[in-house]
Image (cartoon, rainbow, N blue to C red; front, side):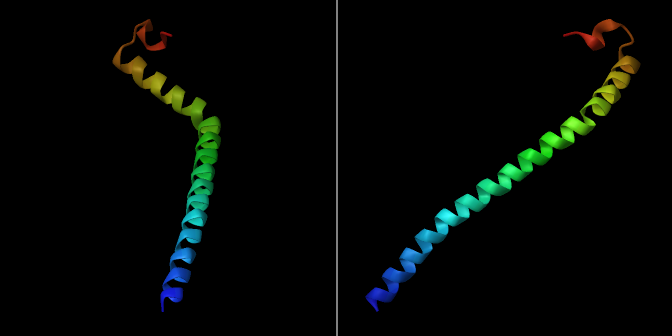
Amino acid sequence: MIELIKRFAMQRDRDRGATATEYALVLGFIVAALIVVLAVFGPSIARTFDKACDKVAPTDTCREG
């Protein structure tokens, strides 16, 4: 019975490493997807914010920096 418990504990420890690796891979894919989305839609989003800023404050304060 003790051996069975030891084997179960060892299996659980091995799964913990696999789970951490899976989470790291998922996080990597999410970061890559965000980079792609921002690269593709970034200029469009920036233009939208510039237009909104121009309507709120029509002076040159919108494009500082």
